[in-house]
Image 1 (tube, rainbow, N blue to C red):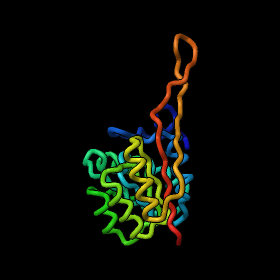
Image 2 (tube, one colour):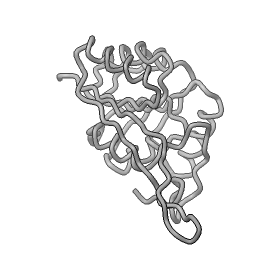
Image 3 (spheres, rainbow, N blue to C red):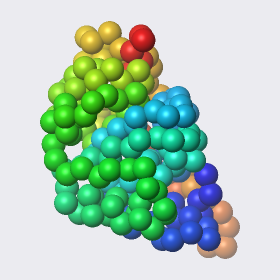
Image 4 (spheres, helix red, strand yellow):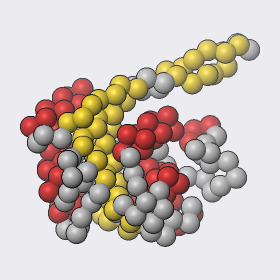
Length: 192
């Protein structure tokens, strides 16, 4: 990933941000690695925010069909503009409640879930659409427990990774590490 400070690409257009985003580069790297995205996949970016996850996914796999969805108008606008600015032409940005949007899709091969509103309904919809790989990012413990329990109930739970990253900062002419908020990355795999 070609990031410079705060997730802005070097020699690229500036990413339009939204509240709660963009996802930090270290979290994106682990999440997309765990997602195991493949060439030609139908990829759902649930709670897409800035669209950065989708932008990075296009660097890992060719010929993706991306459905980026968010219930927030500001996120839909930001993702739409970011896709345009970064030359992403294989993405459709959809406004609406994610489980309903997913239910209207023909199929989903893999999904990144960054927005956790109605998470159990979202997981159910992704399972019904045949998603072989689902990655959920969360910061709230209650959400983590809810996701793990529901993934186990549906027979798709794989693992959870807890990421704590710190960034170097200057302090009185020397360097210290300022911690970022910890993130839980939950992985669900469906047998094909």
